[in-house]
Length: 271
Image (cartoon, rainbow, N blue to C red; front, top):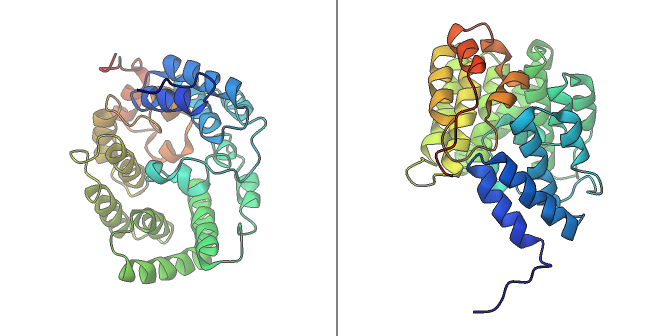
């Protein structure tokens, strides 16, 4: 067997990814910091180090700092992490959402990344999501309707496209079609079940809980959050993150949600 190269930043990145998914925040932080010491331009390590800071302490300033030296638009590890609205909006832009600087988040999506139908659709979906979180869905009806039309056409051709299902769920929320939003978010989760993928599956269930929170299904959302908070696939759920993420604002007055926030971070089962 060939020896592993101690200068290869990909090795600690992969180790960190595993710790990150298993909610071992301090171990993940150590691994990603090591990866960035070896390669300061390692975008995946920076992305997940930022996520570790958010999940462990909710430290947005430190999370932003993790991206120092990483150019905007760098290729990040989002394919397996789709499901949460944070990926739909873009995890860097989501720092503004955390701080409720929604105008800044929208400004980041004033222009599509390039002149393609895919980029335009991504722009529309991100803007719709931001305006829903900002409580401004009523003023975004035109964009949300355009997003819905394009996504339904795409899904007619590719019905198992989980990315489009996630985006469509938020377009439906924006349009007040809550039952449809829950239906398609559940379809996305069912197409990537935990039984088949213990890491990606929980991410789509997180997306379902987010939609439930905005669709008047607070009890269902909290039940799912309690199930997910100790499961692998911890990229977008922790007690610290639940406390600061605007996606959960619609259920903050729910007694069961408040009780969840008052409890300590569950001990990982994977040490």
